[in-house]
Amino acid sequence: MKWKRYFFNPGKKLFLFFSFFSFFVQGYGENRYEERVINYQNKWNNLIPKYTKVQFAGGMGVLSFGTGWDYGKNKQWETDALFGFIPKFQTDKFRITFTLKQNFIPWHKDLNDSFTFDPLTCGLYANTILNGDYWISEPDKYPNNYYSFSTKIRFNIFIGQRITYQISEEKRKARKSVTFYYEIGTNELYLISAFGNRYLKPTDYLKLSLGMKAQIF
Image (spheres, one colour):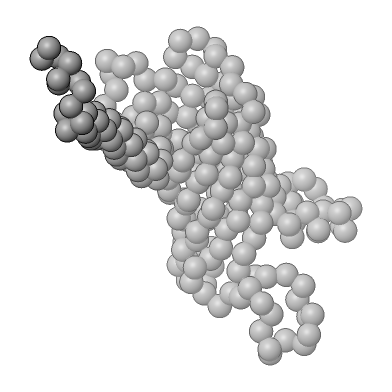
């Protein structure tokens, strides 16, 4: 019978085997390739900033502008990169600052369909002045351990609150939402001064800052 000759023919068996094997390998390879491409694209997409920010005061300049990324299961973490400036009337010359800031927002409370309230925000940040005669390590011109701190980098902590307005989909153009916030913070030198000098008032070592965040994605 023809079908018996076909299936019991060794050459035909090899042909069927290699045909099936090549089909399986090709399909498996295409799936793996597509997975790698998707993972590669997702990794690059994660590097795209998710929002922009502008902040007034806060020990990082009169005004600071920058961008950042939010992440976590409920977007409770944020990382900001901000450039600011100190005008000449506040110092001997115009200065530029850079701040790297980490924010934590434990929970959100929906007020209605348009507004969300964050009852607590907290975090820390490090900022530096990019131009000027500031140093990280003590220069040789000073006696050893004359200064026990860096004049170039300050470390800060803060707490605050936020309110967010969700822009309706039909009105969205370049932004998804707008957030307004305030923060009260201090740096390590102010804290040392506060503990060592009881006559200081909270207004002497605490700083108020105001800001706005525009969510892009």
